[in-house]
Structure formats: structure tokens, C-alpha cells
Length: 142
Image (cartoon, rainbow, N blue to C red; front, top):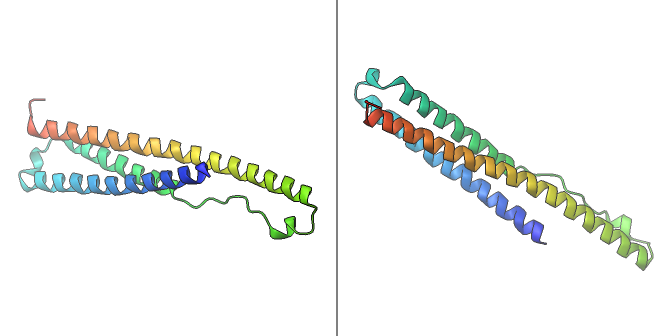
């Protein structure tokens, strides 16, 4: 089914968000440690605030990546529902089950796609905050 392939793709992208957010957190923390090697009292409060905002948004992006990969209950057909029924009824029951499953998968995938979009936006926001902080530290006149 296409929806199952889409679900797997969304889950892989969710894992990628978690990985990239973790890498960016490491970069931010490394940047903070480098700036604190010098005179930490001269670090502009705006730059520190931007870096803290970047860390918070990366943590939120990671949380959304985890939400994408949460197991969700999907409808399951029971074998006893199909045994002992006439052929026409079995076909209708299978068709009804497939329709229910498809609707559930589509709803789940749409929700995951929204979470993925939000996670990616949070990563872009954190990159912008990190850039702003770096500019503020490197060019104090800003």
C-alpha cells in the first residue's frame, strides 16, 4: 500500500530530524563553550538569549521527531470475523476492513506530516537564532 510506504518515509524523516537536531545541539553547546573560554562576562545577553532559544527549539524539534515515531493503534481484522461467512460476505468484510485501514493510515500520515513540517520549521528557526547569536558575538557593533 502507498500509505504504508508513506508512513515508513515519514518515520525515517522523523529519525533524521532527531539526528540533525542532536548534531545542532552539540554545535550550539560547543559554540557556548568556546565563547565562555574567553571573557564570559562580555558575552552579549542578546547572543546568550538567542542561543538558549535555539536550544529550546531544537529540543522541541526532537520531541516532534519522537512523536512521529510513536506507535499508533490501527484497526485489525479478527480471523473469526471472516470464518464461516459466505464468499460474498467475506469479500464485503475484507473491503470494509481495507477501507477502514486506509482511512486510519491516511489520518495518521497526515498528522505525522504536520509534525514533521513543524519539526523542520523549528530546526530552521534554531539555525536562524544560532546565526543571529554568532553575528552578535562576532560583530559587537550589531
